[in-house]
Amino acid sequence: MLEITDLHVSIEGKEVLHDINLVIRDGETHVMLGPNGSGKTTLLRTIMGFGGYTVTSGSIVFNGEDVTQMPLHERAQRGMGMLYQRPPTIAGLKLGKLLDVTAKRRADQIATLAGELNMDRFLDRDVNAGFSGGEIKRSEILQLLVQDPSFVMLDEPESGVDLENISLIGNATARLLEKDQHLIHRTKSGLIITHTGYILDYIDADIGHVLIDGVFKCHGNPREILKSIKTHGYQECIECQRM
Amino acid sequence: MPADVDELKDLSEEDRNRLELAGLDMAMEERSGSFFQVDQEIRHVHSGAEGIEVLPIADALRKYEWLNDYCWHAVDRDKDRFTQYVAKQEVQRGFAIIAHKGAKAIYPLQACLYLAGARVQHVHNIVIAEEGAELHLISGCVSSAGTTGGAHIGVTEFYVGKNARVTSTMIHNWSESISVYPRSASIIEEGGVFLSNYVCMQPVRHIDMNPLATLKGRDAVARFSSVVVALPGSELDLGSRAVLQAPGCSAEIVSRMITRGGSIVSRGEIRGEVGNTKGHIECKGLILEDGLIHAIPEIAGLVVDTELSHEAAVGRIARDEIEYLMSRGLNEETATATIIRGFLDVKIRGLPETLQRQIDAAIDAAESGF
Image (cartoon, rainbow over all chains, first blue to last red; front, side):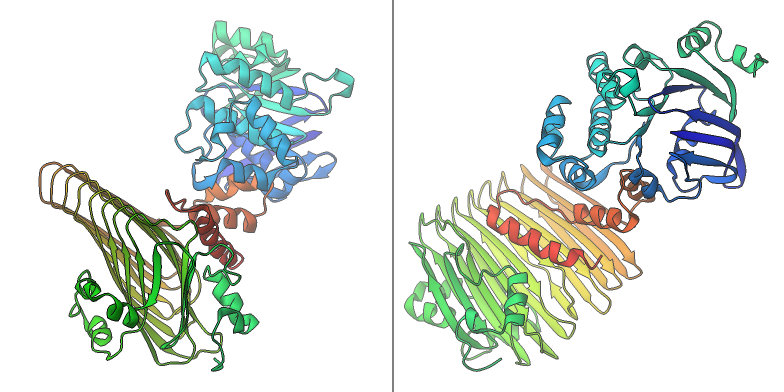
């Protein structure tokens, strides 16, 4: 699905990601952990193709195609999707209208999905305007379910979400990643940034990665990594020489 | 314009399209009355709504002597050289619409002011909604496709009676060589509601207007909404004013402006003269190409218990908004157009659905130009 090789990324001339290597196969879900400012969101945005992130060397190959220099929207059209941690507010643009123009699904399916995510009342609201933390995440997931990407990147899907919403969002995320499908039929893949690990209660992630100062410090069982970080903090990862 | 054009249906297809863009319903299926003036000639007057009269203003002034009290009452005939020009005309052109007490029109009335070749078209309109009456007016102001120059001067006086409701939707579809000077004012009595909507998405040389609403009775409401685009060579000086003179009154002025190289001065003024009144001005501008958007929202409170506020913002479309939509699979052009269409999407509370559709259609028609 996704293969990143020797990737170096700069922002305004300063290198922030160093020698990133990552392989995510069809049906796999990976989790990325790391302290604030370590480059996790930068990596997601670079994979997605946002402006301002310059790949100085290395490559991003998606479904066998080198997308390193491909425009953002073409990557989205080829099946990449992203859940934003803090999406922009778009005054005047109704959520329903946005879903209509980005949908790969039929109108009645959009309405059903909106109902399932308790977002039907929001279709006539401006995108993200005045939405609470949970509403933003539900809106993001609804947009992704409508867009139907094969590879989805989630930037802290549980942040700012109250307990009431966490299971709704967790289950919807699982659906986005086809966790209800048997492993051999599952084709959708994901890369999730999480700080708390709550999302792991709903999604069986396959592999975890720890990113510190723009470098992968560890790969392994996501629950074990999370447990270690919760017990010892990131200092142990920084000192760890396993990589 | 051929001399034998007496009805909208007699126009050329090109001009009919221009009128439809200005919100006029050629088939009259969703209209309860109409008025059609070509240059200085009134070609067609009709009202099908019970209790609502549509008359050429000269006939109306002869028919109802009391109407003279409404003539040059809301608008001062000496306000400026344009009102003076209209006032000095021997025969007044334009329409009078009178919705008698309690009369309600289900469908809007439409007025078409068509500039075919005259150097100046002048009109003087009076719209009266008596107590409890309700009327919706859509005015399409259009110049013929072949027009090479000219000016339109339009005086309109609105009188909204006790608990009456008037909506006035004006869609302009002029051309690069036309200058336009609407001079309108409204007086709103107790419990009356006046909604004024203005759309100009097409080229024009110059528009200068600053309508005034005087809210005289308790709980009167005035709302002005405008959606305008200034193309290169267009100079738009637009404003709206509201004076709150009785407790419970409220006024709102909302404008959405886009420049693609033209200039827009957007004025707004609300004056709170008595307590328990509210007013808000919202001006938002997008600069797509270098031009001018000059927002001048003004609020003046004279007493302790008047609440007035304004917000104004002028700028470009934020890059993160465009990229957000691109990450959902839209190319940059479509993402930008989608955001602009949203920016212009002013939903007007209390406006009949058919008129909102008309406004949406006028905006959609210009969308491809973004």
